Length: 366
Image (cartoon, rainbow, N blue to C red):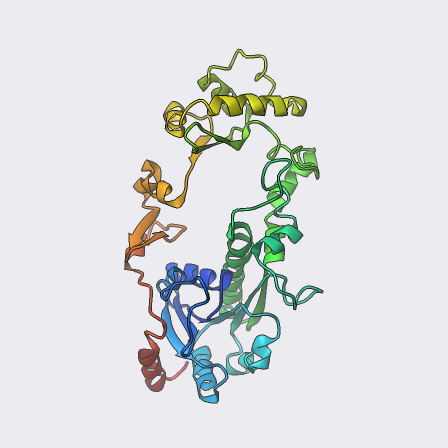
């Protein structure tokens, strides 16, 4: 879908390379600039999954010759992505003003946690810090437990990478329409706060409380995960009354006076305790089979390997293993472009350096 779009990615961590992986998944030509003679960050593999589908060139951005190579790449590209603290690229002579001189139509994507401006802009932080400050972590975990979101998903990916992708593509559309280049300031605190707007609509009708455990989606017995007898987990979220009716009917509780009131918040703690006891009486597989095919809004809570074996996930080909690496297939899907994640290889660092340099030497930028 994005064939014809070329993006230069300056090697970084987390959301910026994830955003570029998604662009590559969608067909963009992504050239990642790895540090010359560098090594992966601690804990990261030599060939990173989030580099799949990209071309790799190694450059030293403190070398005048290599900076010239980067600028040649920028001349031939529509977008650049970097994820450093504010000011780092400027000190290298590669800030937006520097590169707009090379390519006035460039879309310059900047990925940070705190944003380019503000009191925290120059301080360190990580995913959990950003979503905690933005309010996005407030309703995570059950009442009485400290908020904790799934690592990276709400902040780095949801509030960061996906907003960078959207901003970058909007900028490219504007540039192609003749409105010139732009800087995309994608901050995780901004994006994760923006993600709260769907939940904030509940506040308009009184369904959202600033007290944890008192809101429509974080307090009820019908909106949480339960532990099963084998240590597995089952998720329940039957919000609408018709789905709640199906849920209690499948459990044989439709005549139980303890469960007839769905929205009485005063009864939620007792109802939760009763359901916890019920689900703890059987293994997860029992509950999966009991609710299979129903509209009770119940599903197992699985780890990635278990998810890959689930019949629904397997039928859609959501998970695959390539070169021994378990990974999720590209998303979303298009009717005119079948998913082909298996063919998206993970490059070695600098694998395409020579071929890219040869291409630059013979190609004249438009």
